[in-house]
Image (cartoon, rainbow, N blue to C red):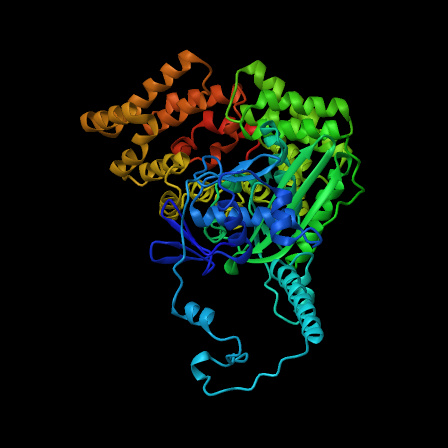
Length: 640
């Protein structure tokens, strides 16, 4: 390693001091990332293969998890340099090959310092300080006894062997490969993780079209880990915002409210899958565990189960196993299922449905695919749809959810699909309550399960239980539905508490439009019309916002509602619009006839959201009307 200082951008890499500086500040970079950065910088823009990295930094004969080590070192280099892997300025990834340092660099020869010059010019026989003795404290002539040449050679070899052994042990202990550190320091207190975020697995395949596979593996791993009752696992929705966003793990953990981070990568090549994973205790940036896996596609289910059990053990949580043996999954069917979930999360429901049907065709007893198929029918029409489309969704979702339950009664996903069908489509609150209870029992740490159960309990007028479920959902994962607790407070007429909750969520996630929409409604019911319009206007874009504000200045609250009614009619001319929306707007005008007319229309059209009419403060003023009571009786809703 040359002793010069290498300059690139506003950084200086000082090999003599083993330092990376930016201006006058020394940047913190651990030994292996520092050595890798030096290797890359000194390669003068040439590709450095992963094999070459292993050989230069670890040595060919050291049996440690070098794949994980390289990935971790590259991540830390990028964090320190502020480098974006998608648009790199410094370290470029050559997929499947290695890395290249792409920034211009210049070398400034080292001039040395006083101590170095004195050491170089000292006579060979000059006394040397012993370990633990400073040079300043050394005075006089200290006799030096030199061993015979043969003995000296033996000492040198023994010393080198000890140093090499110590280096390997230090590496194993430092990175905790295969739990070595824990075996060395079994008596030391091991941090226990109570909340875990599984960051999106990095796709290391040469094919970027394999992103769905990496995302699907992430999703399934989250689902498995969330079944551990003693561990809070952040939802996929919340962690996906960190996909390809390389930020300090401590910041990510703080934002998600967790003390544990699981990160890794997956590489698919033909019928083989290589996966790396590492568990980090975020408050100390401490590696607790790391492992690599090489499996056949046929063994993915067992790999994920093994990984979930291992992680649960590492965080000190009990594991939960399925009530019945897991069926082997056809790799092609599993691949179609993962692609379907990828499309489902992108709200491309028709495409997702095609993939779920393909998975079922390849493996008819694939329970998860049947449950997902039901979801793909329910999600796009839950707010309403034309009669034929809604009827098709109701028929197909019931069939798919029933088949999923018949295949696997221990599947929380199957119970979720059936609970959603019974609640939104069948309007069968008793069955929805039973299915949601089973889902929560099977997957007690799933925020979505508690959120749906809160809906059911609200419709049953079991408000205290409903609020408890929504609070639990928010405690497990506050980012999946940041508006949900505020909405539940609004529906139980706790307006002041709803305002406080929604204001807090708006500050944390200012771009979450639903939070502002619900907050506007709460202000309206409190009579705080100025504040209501302030929250409402930006939701319609710059032009719409100006029109809302102008209407309010000209005609007050009534004019704003009239503007929204005109907008609804314009949108309806472009396509289907649930009549329930009209009922809400006329309710704001306190026009009972029109409100009841559109509620009756929504009931006839079977708009799913009608299930909430007893919980909606907008309709409180018509509760005593016989026409309203007739709808409640027909739907068998409990008294408000």
